[in-house]
Image (cartoon, chains in turn blue, yellow):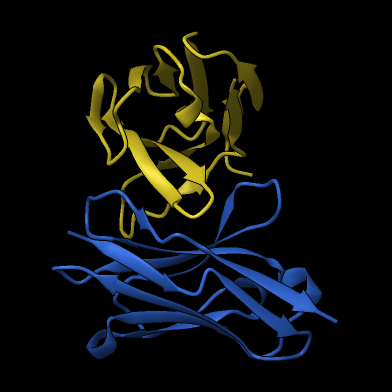
Length: 112
Length: 113
């Protein structure tokens, strides 16, 4: 069965610092992997997705994630945090034809 | 925005009353999903549909039923609401091709007193 573990329910960074949000997955077949972002009182918006093409995936707002099969990881990074990045971030996994399974989320706080 | 709307957006009800949440899409997508979001639990799948009258259970389906009588509408019903069903409910859609990317509605916040 698929599963996702997001390490750290809350991450705090200073503006301009590196953002690193961790996600590990479990899947019996090559997975599809996703990062979604949720701003306060809004729905979820797709940041980026991995679909077995390039292992380094670039998304919106300067975020990127790297698929590492050997580590079963799909960590999200951004070189320089901005105040507007403060939000909740969800990692998700699916296999072909199955519903997405989400992690429990990581809240990113950005201080000036 | 993708054509997906949820109604009502906010609802307060009392324990034991029935509640129906509606998800409406204009994308003609085959797949529709209901998730609930709770602090510390992320999003958990309640039910999903892969076509008209074709539905299946997710991991937290107890106490919920769904119906899909036409492509554009997916209804989630709480037959007798309980306080544990206080949550934010999200509908999502996808055409099911490729990576199965979901597009989400804005959510329905339900409070059961």
